Amino acid sequence: MELNRYMQQLVDDIAALCSPERIYIFSVKVNLHGEVTSFKLCVVADTDSKAKLEQKIYLSLDCELPYDVVIYTADEWKAFTNNPLSFAHSIMEKGWKAYDKAPQ
Image (cartoon, rainbow, N blue to C red; front, side, top):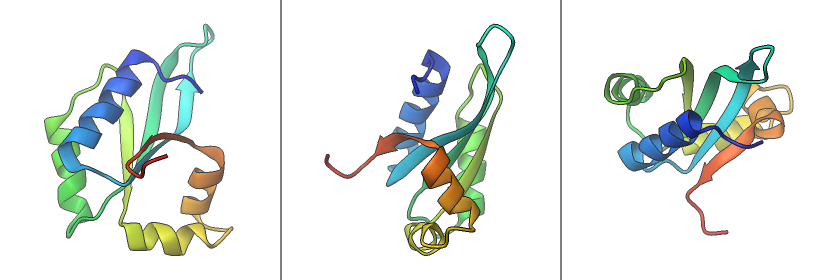
């Protein structure tokens, strides 16, 4: 999947804001012309408060396209992605990894 400039900018901004381990893009909606109209992001980050991080992202970062954010801690991500019935596992399998802090 190729990110459009708005999606890429938001991924870059989130990476700069909170230095997450990973960011996934999933549930991308497009119009009849194939243009992205909205999308969801999954941010895997070490944080003491997922609610505060979510609030910080929404209040600090704007995007031309509507977006939603789901946040997992690294421990939650590891536990939930091991369960093939979990939402996290579905994101990992069907989503697109747009950012990975680990060296490739």
